Amino acid sequence: MSLLTRRSPAVAWTVFAVSAAMLIATAVLGIADPASRSPADIGPSGPSTSDVAQNDAALIVFEALAFLAVAAIGGVVSSKRPRNAVGWLFSMAAFFEAVGLLAYALYWHFAFGDPSYPSWVDLFAWFSNWTFLLALGPLLTLIPLLFPTGAPPTPRWRVVGWTAAIAIGVAAVCTALAPGPMDSSDFGWIDNPLGVGGAAVRSVAHVATLVAALMAPFAAASLVVRYRRSRGVERLQMKWVTTAVCILIVGVVATTVEEAIFGGFLSWPVLLAGLLLVAGAMGIALLRYRLYDIDVVVNRTLVYGALTLTLAAVYVASVLLLQLALNGATGDSSLAVAASTLAVAAIFRPARSRIQEAVDRRFFRRRYDARQTLEEFSSRLRDQVELAALDAELRGVVTETMQPAHVSLWLRGSG
Image 1 (tube, rainbow, N blue to C red):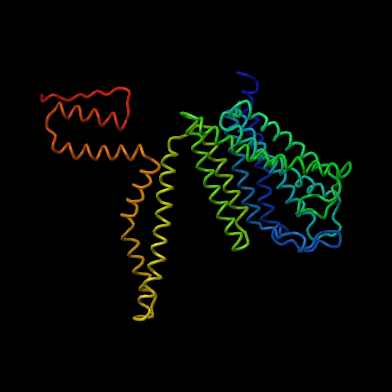
Image 2 (cartoon, helix red, strand yellow):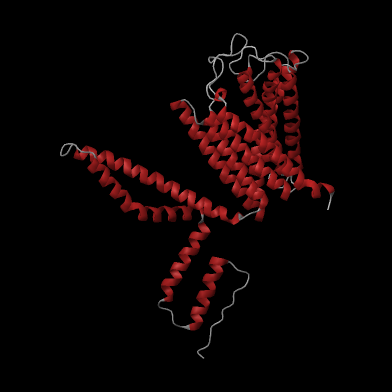
């Protein structure tokens, strides 16, 4: 056993402990510090409420807890699979995000309401201004590219990985050293306390950030390529992540619509929850824990999601129609609500059976065909009494439904 393998659990859990301590401190500051809930005018040398968006304590706590879960996933995977780079990338992303979040909370803690706060407080803003690149960059590029084996799908995809890694590193360094006002909208009024060089450094940072962002679609495409080529355990691993990514896409689309209608207050929490779901699916897949259950999860999600939408549509339509029909006879809408509730309760079982059959027929064809075969065999078994014919029929059913390598049938004698 190599030195890296022996010490990897200790290193992994040390990184997790440090990240967890910073994230918990961030959550505590987000709850206890009034600056995190209602930032007011700092004074002539600082921002006003018109310059800085209101900080929501619930959002800060949620973000800290989300990356705490990412740190835990990284710690578990890194300690169990130390030779797989994906676990270490999860740990690194959580660590740098923890640094950025804690620095953000500490800046507001010291600078809030004080127009002449010490200059060293700006260093917290400086940390928060660039560490997020080292957190979100690997999550969106390197981890999708390397999952689940820790290597790209083919050697040709290494170009994408190296390009993304170099671009993320250059973007972080140049953003940290770019002179003038910081790029972050949260600290745009602060001049970089460690800025060096000229405007070219900032331009390089912008170009590198753009290159890293362009690598994200290629990394997502590598998952599609890997899924199409995968077999066995790797196919099950890819199923978990594919399911989580589909849920993330649905959430992003839903929040886009919500943003257009209501102003978009759910966008960042839903994106965080979706990324956390994908990270959790990757962690389960890498540890190979109960991978076969994904078919059950997908099946139940499709069935009960469709059933919920169907019952909701029936309920709303029946309430509206009954209210229109009964409006002339009675002015009470409670009768329509009660009748609609009874109607939904009456169609629950038939609707669930129909939807389950449709989902199995469309997405789980093998299971659907097996059930149909067993039902046909059961109906023929009532009239079958000849032993040889029953033996042949039973062998055929087992072979068709279970597809075993060998089939044998033993019957107990009458004695």
